[in-house]
Amino acid sequence: MNLQSKKIRLLLILIAVFITSAVTAELISSKLFQVHLKIGSLDLGIYTSIIGILPWPIVFLTTDIINEFFGIKVVRFVSILTAVMISYCFVIVSVSMLPHAFTGLPVGSIAGVANDGQFNAVFGQSKWIIVGSITAFIVSQFIDASVFRYFKNKTGEKYIWLRSTGSTVVSQLIDTFVVLYVAFVIPGIFSMEQFWLTALTNYVLKLLIAVGLTPFIYFSHSIVKKYLGKEFAHIQEEKASKESLNEKV
Image (cartoon, rainbow, N blue to C red):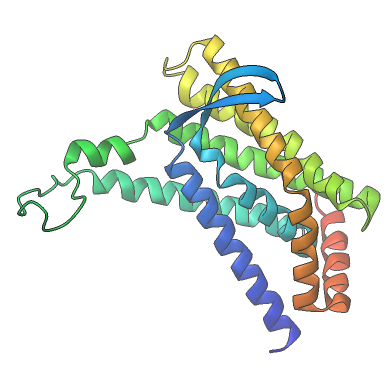
């Protein structure tokens, strides 16, 4: 396999992982859970968060790898494509709720057959959640790509952790507060007090995840460089940086 074929295959894998992780995050984001935060003997209390944050570490990671080796223009394109795919997914899910479920099969013939109420309760997310999620996703991704590229242009190949974590810190501040406000405050599900508590909890968890991802960021870079070859990987980084300088960052 030649180097260009490897490059294309790598990009396709990254895009597939990126879109799958983002769509999965949106599908499960209507579920809330509670986190009991403790630091040693210090009990910080119990806070509410959204289960949809679970796949986001993979989104963070793939965003940064795409930006590093393929540039900001590709990240923006993939982000728009993902927003379209999320919208498409919600359209299909909405249509799937229209036919009535058939539950007349003998008991035990098929395990886990869902009726309309069960199916709709799982997949029937509020339209506000959908709007908030897509809006927050696209805005935060564009900000993440721009902040990442800003640090990359300033530091060159040094301080991978700074551009990766720094871009996440800024972008997820926007994402977390926008999605919760649009999805839960506007329709009257959350009071402002609940909004601030949940948003701050989500944001802190995302920051902890971002920091925890640091070793994986360096590991993923080494895997990419090993796969493409150090020389070709370096050429890709240089090409991505030059193309990104011509973009508005």
